Length: 499
Image (cartoon, rainbow, N blue to C red; front, side, top):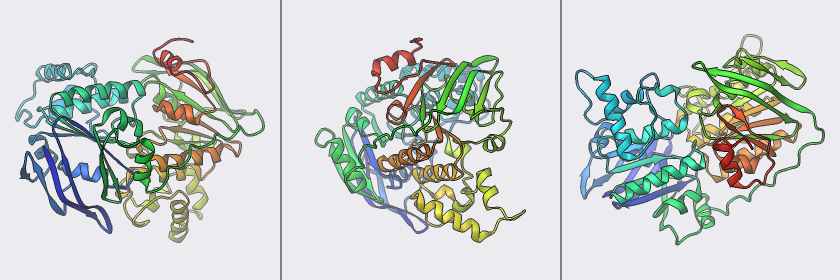
C-alpha cells in the first residue's frame, strides 16, 4: 500500500533521515520504535506531507506520489494524529472536524450540518467525542485525542499515522484506542504508530521497525522478538535497569499540605474537598482519567487559578499564589503537561529557553542586565548535565526532538531547587533511557528533603515512581495508597468507587 525508497532529510547540520527504505501492507498495524531524535516523527511527517524529503521516492499503491502538503496527503487518503494536538481550541468540535475534511465547504458553513456530520463520523467509528457543540479547548485530553482520530479519518483515510497516541491516555483509554485500531485494520486500513512503550508493541502491532540516528536498524514480526531485544536494538545497548526507589529521607515534616480544596469550572465543581499532605523526601502520585480535576489542581498550585475554598501550605506557611512568579517565590516549581503550549518559547533559542524560570533569572541577572557570557555558560552546563542533544545553544528550541525539549524543561525547573515540584506527565514522549533519566533526577531531588507531587495519566509511572499515591475522580481524592496495589482496585477507584 505504501513504500518509501531512499528517503533522506536534513535540518541544518542534523541528518534526521538517511536513505530510509520501508514498505507497509494494507490491513497492518506497524509500530515504529527508537530513541528521541531517532527520526521516527520526521519520517511520519514526510509521509503526512508536512515535510518534503531532500531525496527519495514515496509510492502509494505502487505509483510515485509527491505529497506537497498535509492537504495533499489527506486527499491521497493519509491522515495523521500529531503528538501535540492540532485542534483550533476556540472552535467547536464540529467546526474542527469540518476543517479537517479534504474538501470543506467553500462559502458558507451550516452549524447544524456540521454538528450532524461530526456526530455521524464519530458514530461510524464508535468513538465518543461528547457534545459536538462543545468548545474544543475546554475538553479533557482523552476526548481531544478521540477528536483528533476522527479528524484524521474524516474523508475516508486509508492510512492512519499516530505519533505517541497514548502519551496522555490512561491504560483503559489506551485499550479502547487499540480496540479501534484493530477494527480499522480488519477493514483493510494501514495503521502506523510511534511509541516508546514496548508493551504496546507486543499487544497491538503486527510488525515493528526500529530506528536509530535516522536509519533503519531492523524490521521484525512481533512475536519473533522480546521486549528486552527491542529495547536493546532501540538504544544500541542493554536497557537501563529498573530504578530502585530510595527510602524517604529522614524526618516526617510535611512540605506541601492541601486541606479541603475546592475550585469551579464553568460553574461546576472541578475540585471537591481535595485534602493531602506530601512529606519531605517523598514523591506523591495523583492517578486518574484525565478531566477529573488534575489540571485544576495543577493550576491552583502554580498560581494560574484561584481556589473557591480550602487552604494550601508550603511547609508551615499559608500559600495563595496569584501568578507562577508568586508560586516560585513561595517555593513551588512546576513541569507543565504541554511543553509546546506552556513551557517553551519555540521560536527562541535553546539558551534563551533555559532562562524561562523566575528563580533562574534572579540568579543570573546582574542588576538590570543579563551577561551573554553568563547565560551561555549556564545554558551549556544545563544542557550537558541533563544530556540535551542540541545542534547549538543558539539553535531554536523547536529544532530539538520532543525528548530533548522535555529534558531541557526538567533541568530548568529543577535547577533552582524549589521546596515542592509539581510535575505533570514529566516523561511524556520520552524513550526508555530518557524517562529513566527523569526518574533519576526526581529521585535525587527528593533525597535532599524536598517533595514532588506527580500528576500523571500513566498509571505504571505513578505506581513505579511514587512512595504513596491517590486516585482523583470527579474532583474527589481517594484514600492514600502505598504500592504495590492490585490493578483491579485502582481501576475501581478510577471508575468512581469511594474505597
